[in-house]
Length: 439
Image 1 (cartoon, rainbow, N blue to C red):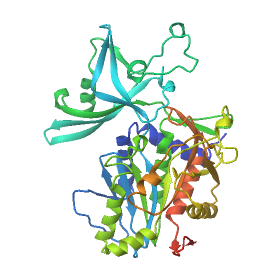
Image 2: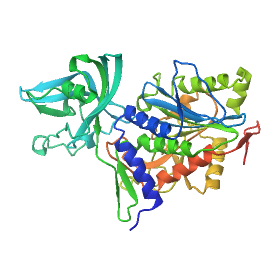
Image 3: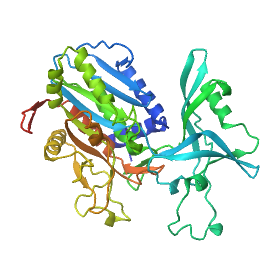
Image 4: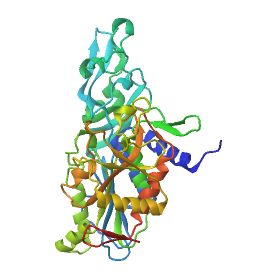
């Protein structure tokens, strides 16, 4: 069976994920893609110079990135696609080593985000992240990726835990500490220092994570599924950045924002709850010579898509899904609704997104939580507290969300790339009464 365009796109996306074990690596790879496409880096602590037709990006904290293209002619507003760079995993504590019985060395970790913990057992894992060290250049941050099977969380044998298959609970401080070595091995700090190219005593602090390094795969009787670490939400982030690289718009600024820390509430300087997006948009307006009123007009003419993966109907648990609003793998982009506004979609924003997808030939399916089962929130409503504009929440259907190895449909990555490319290329006219003209 020959590889389809759907499979090729999903494989490209999974190759990106394989090279992005942490949010820092994901953003570094986005920078490389943007550099290769002629985007110019901007630093927040330096003056900006923007030219009509220019393409730019800026990074905050090494883990969030905003990229945009300026039209050659005066622009009317912004077309924004947002996603996030982080995924649930284990963060290594500052004092990272724990000995057991003078024989074993474990890593001292804590959960990051709402993890599905059981799938982390008995799976080879690695360590990646960033270290901050004193070098000849001063205080410097360097990325590290051990990129080998380094640790594992062994489960307790069924003989010693007869209730293991009967809704057993887990204590992260006891049950989920990864085994690193026998006593007397090279300390983790030395391994990390070697990977970073610094002396162990030069490391001042670190942001290191235990991560799943299994490569993504295409599977199923007809190769209709994909499985990979960190599909939530690097699948959407990669699709959004890929679409931006293809975008050409003469009336609006296409802008891709990838935020960190969505999995822990977005309330950091680099999260969707920060001023990052607002700062960039105001700065673009100021540097391109617009007044504050003109900026407010631009915001009113703008639109945002918050892209974060959605729950597919689970084949073993159909009762967990809504009876009618239940997406499936390979069914197309998911449009998410919530009466309590955990998602920002309303009839106006939904109609515009549906019209764009219809024009692009991209299928759309609908998600709403089953009544009585609370759902999580995402980027759209959080970022709207700083930049208030019409927004729809979208994503791709997946299974095993927040597992170290998640499943999605092989077709859906390309569907999202096509939808977001069409969105970025849209010529919208805001008619001022909650309606739009789409050309």
